[in-house]
Image 1 (cartoon, rainbow, N blue to C red):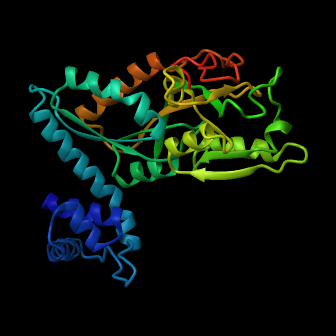
Image 2: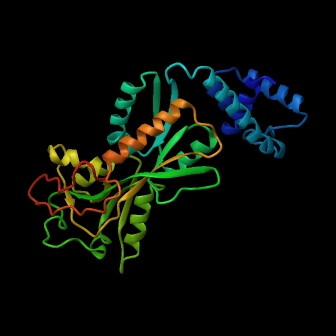
Image 3: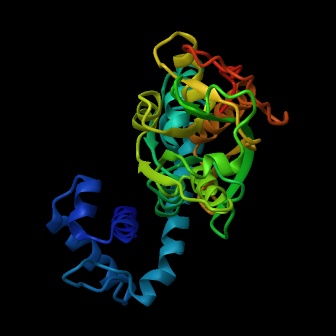
Length: 326
């Protein structure tokens, strides 16, 4: 059997559309149609329903998809074994939260370029659900998740680091100049700029805010760390962000804000995730090793949560949040 037909089959299963599959494979849509018809004729069963809204798998297609993926994995292993005497090479697609993409991962990419110059890493900023779906569909080889638990029958995860969180406010904010930490009932009356729904620590923080007695917080969600950070620094409200995304900005004065002293916030785990069934190419394994090694060194590791020192309210301060905090 021509493995190109299986590649087209698995790609169409991921995308759900002949047009999208053709774009992903850099083929004409008519070629994708021919591949699927040929495979269906060879196997003797219809693999997809042709609907105006897309091409969902039939029951037979769902049953055979895992088998097709195993065949393609076996072919990939065969090709890898044939070239194992040469340098590790290939393209690895990694899904990651924006905060890690901008702060932790540049050092990892730099190290990989030195150690394995023929390995290309494609970083995709994405939330937890998007990363999990990317692993399931095969669009991602690896993913970094900032969740307590994201294990499933298909997705395996391992904790590799922890990142601290910081409450950020403008220097003139009423809660920034107090002589005691802000309590949950203080925060529950404020306007917050949080990262979009699906960000695990933002969702948990909002739930805790709304659980406070008489809670009436105003919540605005953003898909961008920079937007949330800038709104808080401009005095429009507060935000909760990984400390790594604000520490350097506070230190060098690029961001006029303070790390607010508030209730204890648990560090957020960083987990390396991959698909349980799919074979990992040598390049993906090397990228995984580099992520584990560098993030464990850069993050807070297994240390307990550290509270920031109380900042002055008269200008930029780093609030005692070192660059190794999230």
